[in-house]
Image (tube, rainbow, N blue to C red):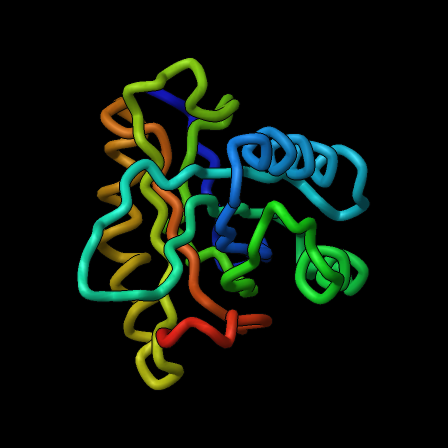
Length: 184
């Protein structure tokens, strides 16, 4: 069984999440390179990940659909210069920022093997991430359910190798939302 790393209430990680619509195939490579550079070169950045949206549902919505989710992980706080660079500063023309937000890891519901190095060696595993905006009045109840039930069950699945990781995060603040989108 795997030795697990869990994020507990006193070890919260702060995440800068950006949903991006890349406009061409070359953008994918530049986004991957940028997230790696951020994780390697910036003080306080403890990691990063870039997820590509594998399927797009065509429906009645005319809203732009994101095709990349970028997560930058920090201990305690996202530095102001990072927020300026990745959210406020004009972005390359080949990418379109749709939404940027600060996420906090949900206690006991952010679990991965201690030796986790990504899913590249297990391509059959699709990432499953949950981040939700829980209304303030229900946040305590939500965290209680995650700590007592969901987190321990997910930890068991990670321990036995049934899933690679289980990552749940809460929206703390929305920093940017493209005004052309008609959704929250």
